[in-house]
Length: 309
Image 1 (cartoon, helix red, strand yellow):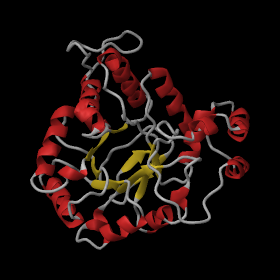
Image 2 (cartoon, one colour):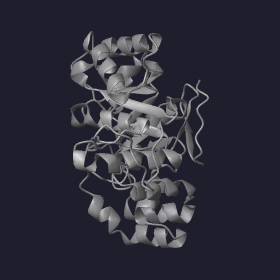
Image 3 (cartoon, helix red, strand yellow):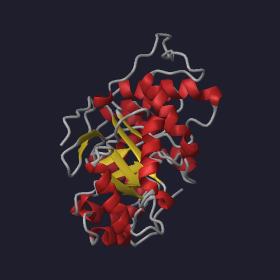
């Protein structure tokens, strides 16, 4: 168990005892442009300063560019190789690794021997760290789950990762994983989740709760989804935002983490947006709020395919 502690009010305790912030930071599509590199690095650092000390990335994101951006943000390195300036103009300092919870993901094609070990080494080099707090299988591929799990456990033994999990696994995938030796060591399943995409509540989320697997919600603001416009124009969400004197995105994030076992990882490329996301930690939605949101975006009454966009 890690002694890692976050300053956020809302935390999630993983099955291994680690406590992580319920609001973290995603990096999908970050790091792709040199022109926005320093601003994106400032945004990540602003999030860390506000308690969003969990950062999620993946080897697939920009073919490693997102991982390298995270590494630069942690070290305070600007795009030209000099020292990064914070949004307020002060010189950036290297962040304390022990105060961060860093997550990355391995591609399914690299999730077996020997490729997973090379992938992990490259990810660590990109990030400039000695270990990952959590390493996820990005989605299920052709490599047998038993082989991937055995490799994950070997990476733990080597001290290169502290824990592992999966992403984009539906209920049948989780059941298959649980039948594999060591599969029950899975800490997290990262899937798409927000008020407009509640399909996992029918059977996947209950299964995960029964088996002690935390939910990590990607695109928690529908940032890559087709329902973003409907969410942001919702009069019900606007009414809840008015009640709490906050913004609609903040209401959505507060809804995402309401259950106590969900980690939301919104992406932000600007420090001011990151700070807005972090402020959602202070919101406590009432039963009346939740009922209003559910009338607009009801929970599913039947099994639905796993959303990925």
